[in-house]
Length: 182
Image (cartoon, rainbow, N blue to C red; front, side, top):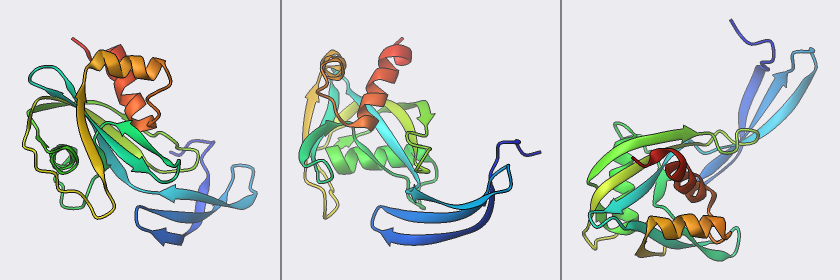
């Protein structure tokens, strides 16, 4: 049974493709019978990891973000790839590739659709503990990443002070502050 609010998809096509996302155009029929086109970004599922070292510090990255024209502090994150058996495989890969840290224990925090009015993005949040520095980053050609550690309290304070601008990271830090600590 479908919901009475559901739109019927009559046709779907990719209107634009680039590295990182597609723009999809759906022809839809609304519940009232009218038809229209609806465009959205399609970028697949990603993981965001809140990595703690054995000493209790949080591993963070700083990376240039061209769309906003500045370096942003963030949590390691990345797209789930077809050869990832499950999201935890992606967590381990991204933490090592971006930050040069090996995963310790890991647990799922939450899953969110951050912009489901115009994108099909899904973020799976994980907390990792006892992460160990390897010093071996394996960055993509378009990544220049600086790695640091900070305290969790400093991240919460950065969120409070409007200094943590990366939305994925803000969500993960605040979710953990509210629901994740034991």
